[in-house]
Image (cartoon, rainbow, N blue to C red; front, side, top):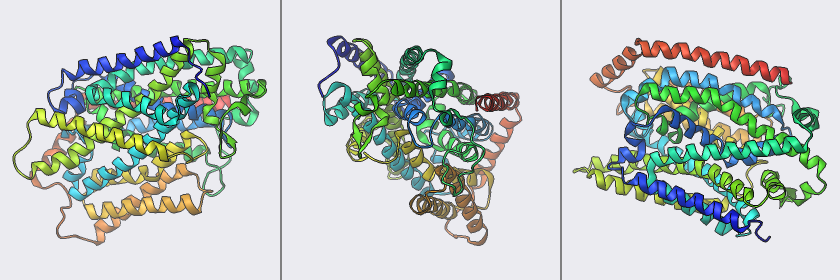
Amino acid sequence: MTSKLSSIDWVVIALYLLFLIALAWWLSRQQESREDYYVGGRRIGAWPVALSIMATQCSTNSILGAPAFVAFAVGGGLVWLQYELALPLAMIGLILFFMPLFRHLRLVSVYAYLEQRFDLPTRLTLSGLFLFIRAFATSVTVYSIAIVVDLITGLGFFWSVILLGAFTVVYDVLGGIRGVILSDVIQLFILVAVLGLLFMMLMDSNGGFLAMLGNLPEERRQTLEFSTHGLGDGQTFAFWPMLIGGVFLYLSYYGCDQSQVQRTLSTKGIDGSNQALFLNGLLRFPLVLLYCLVGVGIAGYAAATPGFIESLPASGGEPEYNLAVPMYMINALPPGLVGLSMVALFAAAMSSLDSVLNSLSATTMEDFVRRYHQHRGRPWSEHRELVLSRVITSIWGIITLIMAFFVGDIATTVLEAINQIGSMANGSILAVFALGLLTTRTHGSGAIAGLILGIAINGLLWLFVPSVSWLWWNVIGFLVTFGTGILLGTFYRPSSQQLYVDGLQRETLERSVTEYLNTEASIDWRKRSGVLLIWFVLLLSVLFLMS
């Protein structure tokens, strides 16, 4: 396929990419230590962090996958909005329980808590699992955007991966977490602007909003699905697995996943961290609703445009529905705006890739490289740690780009693929942290055994019981891991392992967290959590009226 891009489109793309590199270079001059590189010196405001996290969520996987799910996926439609009901509830748990502990410990890697609570093997096991899962999921992101770049430019898949990856890795290596957050904020505004433009164009071509909604088949307009449960009936997207499974997934993702927690640890204090989570609990639903409505418009456009579906590239003998949005861009947008739409797709991919690369580097540096070097003698200088952090980021960038060539056909849509990968382990990971927070007798061996068993059972369900919704895997993994940890903590005592952080360290930790929970700031956040609960009820009511 020859390139659809005009000269002005290429100029728009080039200016955007050069701007990102210049921004990262400017920020690199302000970095003096690994803390500057990984947590921005803990001086970043709550709003930039909140918008950065939202930009990561509004990724290429969302822009491509959500409209495809709404418009074309089997069993899909606006029912995906049920998933967003879980987010405000999960934010309440994180604000009240997780953040007070993590901010007190002044962590760079969230998995460092597990060494203090359990032991070093527990820390390294969870850290290593994060590195594997997040690198794999990121390669899916790179794959999804590279096929779009290839579709529009005709560069070929290989060079599309290189074009996307090279610029992202360079500005990530230079800019650190501050570069990640500032670029994400810029990218979010670009994404929302382009999505808003597409929505307006699709609404106009469908004859208005109500007509556009009416053009969507009735079964796809349903927003709540109470009639099924997803436990063996083959109905993946029923209400209860999406709500309950979603709460467990979001608790794990925002509270135990380094790629998300690292940014909340970059704010000026616990109030900043909680404010970022609070804003996400309120603002994410409107953002998800926007790109789901783009899917509604794409469905109507496809029905009214003969040959549109046939024009999509084939994958496994079926049209590649994930390419419906970029194909519409090619057909509907004039020169210049095609380039801007490409910038939006680049922004979507980069906002996911940059934060993950920085968190992969932080986890590797903190949990493995620096952790072991400290025990061998003389520590490194701050400058040497900064240089090494950038080198590790470069290495992870190369690894994820190579993996992108091997992740082609995983699920019906990109959106499902990412969530299935996460649901395999998220519940079990959350359970390990919950064992540390809620119990005093559980030990590291029990936590790791529960983690392995929980993931293994979910793997067996994926292979042999596909009729169980993968959304339930988050709950199943949690219950299996938590229960196993409790049982082994009760009946098995490894003599070489501590049951909790020892002596004064434990007392100091518990006293500090308890004192915070009794402060006016903590009481205020409990009141604000009520706002999130009201927001949940309001969203549920709106979806009920839409059904």
